[in-house]
Length: 354
Image (cartoon, rainbow, N blue to C red; front, top):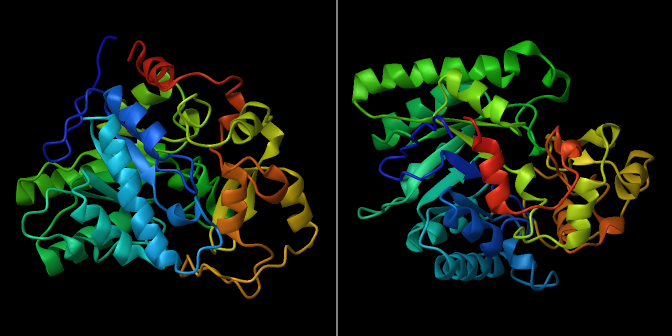
């Protein structure tokens, strides 16, 4: 190891400048999150649908999500003294309740994307130590968030994650824009870094920029650092680890995938998503509906009346190993992963010779 940047998120300084992407439903829970934190990076719990994991027939989903989030945060804390956070999507219908719960549980940081988290600082209490980190896909989105947060709350982000179009899961771009040069990380990172430098001059606050989406090698890590990023966020690489909370069949779907299997889908949430093609998604593409009653109302933007399937149920099924009734979200280069390793190996491989 030649050189590793220091990532400082308002006093949170992990050994490695790496945040593990928060993956839902049920992919990054206490096992994966604590393992990453124990290795000296930042572990993140994926919160979407967290209350459905023990019982997907639960009547009060909001209440179940709150109780499950408390339980998982506490279980994670029992397993690590490292830095842990949660990923809470703005699009979740119980966004406010989950944010409030995480802050009460004294979580180290909240990462929030899938929409602009314009009111996130409003949930902080006077003695809160939780750091707030929005996920953005452009300079414009960054500027809107910063302007609103400063005007309303006199608060600036503690870090900013810039997620490019090579990420897995839901993407903050129009489908037709994914390959455009101007939206690639190489272009967006320097723009956001320059903007945070202006903010530092104006307000005296250091706001690290973290690059996310398709970062799967030491060469890409070095590239992001050379563009001004202070850290990276990585999700897909951690799926194929012993410590990942998903079922072995979920992990095998990733390690058995080929380049042509990784496709862009139209998610019921109203955003494009990157996933591994399988029988379930092929049937959806052919127009075969998966009839369901929307018991969850989990995502504000979900058009559940016309949706061909329930995304919460499909992701939950996949996490539990039932790939006939679900599918796997994955990053653009997930097909390169061909074996199950460990969290330690993933981190060491990313930072070798950096």
